Length: 504
Ligand code: HEM
Image 1 (cartoon, rainbow, N blue to C red):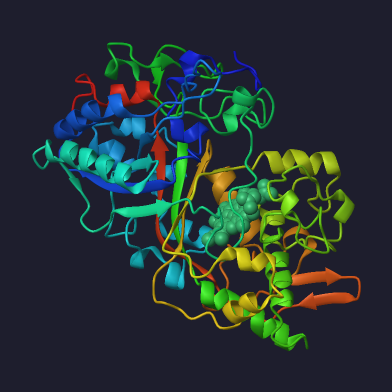
Image 2 (cartoon, rainbow, N blue to C red):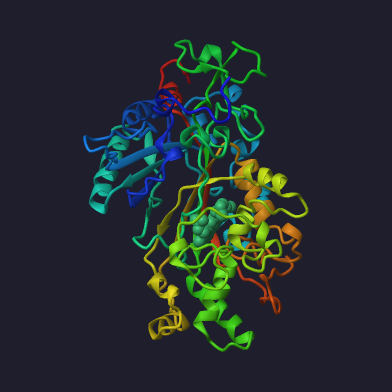
């Protein structure tokens, strides 16, 4: 049996889709194709044709100068539960998937858990809602837009070859990019803190928190979806690594796969900065951009450059923009980084009240997610202005942001071995919970589900040396426009899905 920190072999890495282990940071252009499989045989042909182009986690080759040769593009694929059924996976196998995956993100009680209500309700989603179900998503990453167009053309040609057995859901193609500034649309440096996978870095979060088939935080092999042995006479899939299951009768469909959550999150950038301006005026500071940036940073928990507030409480410090090496014990009351700030509640690190430090660290580790997002929509302003808020240019821009009517936000993807205890836990128990960490009525100002009908108001609470600042009721700056719970199978499991034996 593998231990939590055993290094993944190259053979294993070659079986794990690359999206799980790499953010493809150098591939700035992305597109996501939403697929329906209208007939299982055609679907299998499509998967068989697609599989050779799927990017794995195999280490990138090293050239003569010792430099890694980075791929110029990456293709990955993930399936919804109806998608796996459409490939011919029988109910005996589907029922071994976790309940939340089987039900899907748009099931009414999952919407309640996630706060996907009102404007964020699945009924109005562009894709993934009740009438807009899909089966698979093809994730494409390329170095630039021409490269992405070529990939898109290739993928559409592959779909075309199926003669209608596989179709793209019309009008749902999503495009994303990684901006040169690395800022999300509110203007803050994004994509900084990321858990390291122990099986890859030698230390970090146990591999089984992100890749099925390995020990997780609890020292257990996480539950894995299985298929009856007679569906796999060729023996493509391995027998179960989990020692607590009867050996032999089942094959491990999940090994080297993971679960992926997709949320298209639209950001009201003008609303966000208008709120900060109103709060500055309400606090008696006048329309002061420096105060606005301070308040917005308190909401995020990092300054616009990315510098953690706990390391640089008084002002932004671009030298710390990539810093992820900090804890909260020295700031137990949130004087530097408020307890309600986005980063502090999505990863509370060593302070979860009332637990001791070691227990808090352990609890935090059990709920990490790997974020794999891309931005959509043009940025409304130069985020560099937030680093010098007192200049005339910042003042002119920040005080009078005008909505250009263009949708913008992030395609939020996250990878986790358990959607329930990782992504859903973070969203429900840490972002949407007004009472987390000894707070009273403070949901996550960035990702919380504020303002739902009949809900009490939520406020951002900011402890300072001269007293506690409390904002007016927080509006919802982020709304959900699409979503899905997906399974990203191993290369072996993909070949199994495409196999003739899986009769339909
Ligand atoms: C549009 C919505 C969102 C925006 C604008 C946003 C923005 C940010 C920013 C600026 C950071 C700090 C930089 C970094 O560490 O990467 C961050 C960190 C983070 N966010 Fe979000 N976020 C959003 C939604 C979410 C959601 C929905 C979740 C999960 C439910 C989430 C989970 C996290 C986590 C886990 C971190 C790292 C915290 C840490 O380890 O210190 N975010 N986010």
